[in-house]
Length: 238
Length: 238
Image (cartoon, rainbow over all chains, first blue to last red; front, side, top):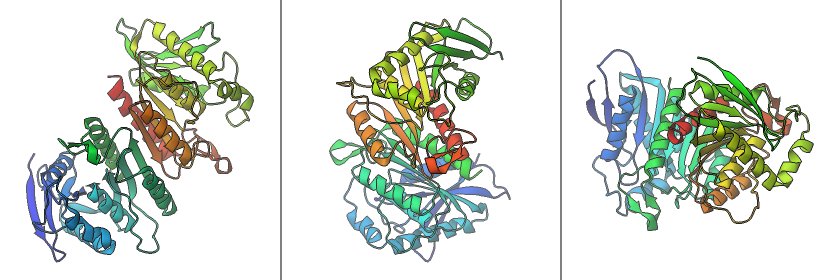
C-alpha cells in the first residue's frame, strides 16, 4: 500500500490535494472529492481523503477558498464563508473546477465521481448535485447546511444524494429539513436524509464540545454516518 | 445449517413462530422479533425471520392478532387493526407477551432482544420501545406509523430506535415525522430516522404497486433499509 500526494493550482485558484492508495496502475478508479468546512481545508479533510483511499477510491481533498486561505475551526470564519453564501454561482464554479481537476487525473474514472462534505462542505456537495454535472454519481453531506441556491430553474438532479444530519443542528432546523426534502423531491433527486436524535452540528469534529453553540462531537453519530457513507458509495460507485 | 420452527400459543392468544438457523447449541443468541403489518402474520414476516436467522440471530415472527386472525395484504383490514389503535394499552400487553415468550426460549439471550416491524408492526415495535421493557436493545420500524400512544407519562426510552421511512408515505406525513422526532427526543431515546425520497408506504412489500393508495414496492429502498437494519443490529446486539 502506498500513498501519493499532488498539489494542483488551477486558474480558479484551487489548491487540491490528491491522495491515492495501493500501487500505481493503469486501471482507473472511482474518485471521491472531500469538501471542507467553513475554516478551509485542514488535516481533518486530508485524513478523510486518506480513509477514502484506503477504501479503494481516489480521495481528493478539494479547496474552495484557495491556497492558504484558512481559519481556525472554532474561530468566526464569517469573512471566509460569506462571499460564497452570497454568491452561489461563484461557489458552483469553484466546485465544478475542483470536479474537472479530479476528472482530468489519469487514475480517475471521470464518470464515477462521488463527493462528501462537512458543514459548509455539505452545502458545496449539495450544490455539486444541484449542478447536475455529468459523472457525479453521488454526494454525501455530513452536518451540511441546506439553504437553497436560488439560481433559477433547477435541472433534474442526477447524482444520488445522502444527507447525514444531526436533528438538533441549529444551522439546519426541522424547517430546513422539510424545505430541502421538498426541493430535492421536486428536482427528482434520489435523495435520503438520515436524522440522528440528540445530535448537533459538527458531530464528526473530534474533540469539539461547545453545546451552547450547538457544536458537539458525537462518536456514535460519527461512526454511524461513516458506515452509511461507505454503504452509499458501494452502491453508487461500484 | 438447520432451521427449526416452533408454534407457541400463550394465554394472551399469541401464536409465535420461531426460526433458528445453525446447529442447536447451548450458547444463547440474540433474538429479533418480527412484527407483522395490518393483515396479520404472513409468509413475508416468516421469511424475514428466516433471513434474520441466517444473520445469526434467533428470528421470532410474532403474532399480535392471535392464531388464525388474518386478512389479505391489500384488503381493508380496518376491523383487524382498529381495536389495537383504539386500545394501545392492549397493544402494549400483546407485544410484551410476545417479548416474554421469546425471552423464555432456552436459546435466546433474554437481555439481547431486537425487534423489527412493518407498517402496523412498525407501530408495535415503537410501542415496545416506549414500554422501556428490560432486555430490548433496539427496534427498527419499516414504513411504520408514528401515532403516539397517549398512555400517560413516558418513561425514558432505553432501546435504541431506527425508523426507516418513505418520505411520501401518506400514513406518516412530514408532520408526523416532526412529532415523533420531538416525542423521542423528549423521551431521551437514541433515535434515528432515515427518510427515503420518492418512496411511499409499503416500500418493502414485493409486488405491490398501487400509487393511488400510496403503496408501492421500491427495490432500492427495500435494499437500503435492510442494510441499515443489519448495521443497526450489529451495533446494538453485538
